[in-house]
Length: 383
Image 1 (cartoon, rainbow, N blue to C red):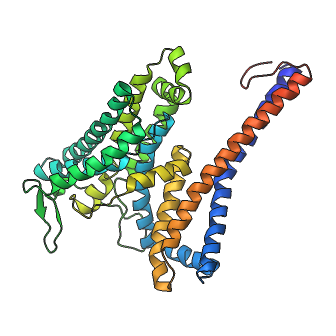
Image 2 (image 1 turned 135 degrees about the vertical axis):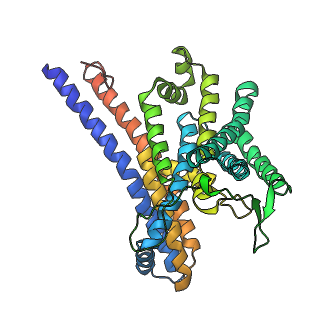
Image 3 (image 1 turned 60 degrees about the horizontal axis):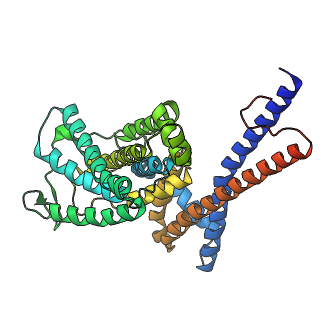
């Protein structure tokens, strides 16, 4: 390698390392800042911050709490992946919440109406959920490519429609039945053949981890491979960064919008499956809600990266689980929501500052090379 090439390679490697360190430091600094804000709020309410964090930490590492954290993190992870697919395409799919709830309802109704051999029954329920989620998301996709309707507006409206439609369907006598021992109503319970047994992964407790935790892992791996190892993923990311450049390279932007929304909706359909097939076995009025909006926060926290999202989901689930012990110590559990909101806001600000710093650093580098009479080197180019 020539000296000039070696020098340029060293500079490029240094910039890449600095960029990576800044990207890693941003969420850490954001979490520390959120802890500072939370400490101030705790002091204002008369609760000692260190003691409160110690209580949450001690409760959070108990075997049963670990199981609850893993189970919550499983659904959070699937929700965040569904959102992240849209984000990578520069699409804001706020409709994940409505997509997964409607998908879970229809899948539960189908699963409760049939009895098939074990694996087939489970696969049927999951496929129905993915198809319903993708189908509901396709409405927003078609509105965008055919009529130019913003997916933000259409998916918000579709959330409301999905909620009303689900309520109407659930209250029909042919779809819903009364849950014995309560005033609740739900779909027919899914037979044993359609249930996914839990896993006794954590010693010291009888509670079990959702068996579909491996589905979440598989979805994360598939998400990474699809976006980073396939032509489709390259086209999707390229379109998200610059539609003009994508069109110039022969990519159909409208096709990519539809495909991205369909994939996001299909992933959204999986969100309710761990709970449906691993715990409740029926969709009822008390089925978990709001997971789609939690997924938005975690996708932002994890920067749409499958590993970053995993850490974000675990953190979110840990905080949510640990909040349960605070009331016993006369500490408002809402402090956890303050911490979660502050973390997301801090992460967004931190990443924006890193982005601006990188742009300014690149501008200074180019200006310096121009001033010295050296032609600016594009990253990845040879000298």
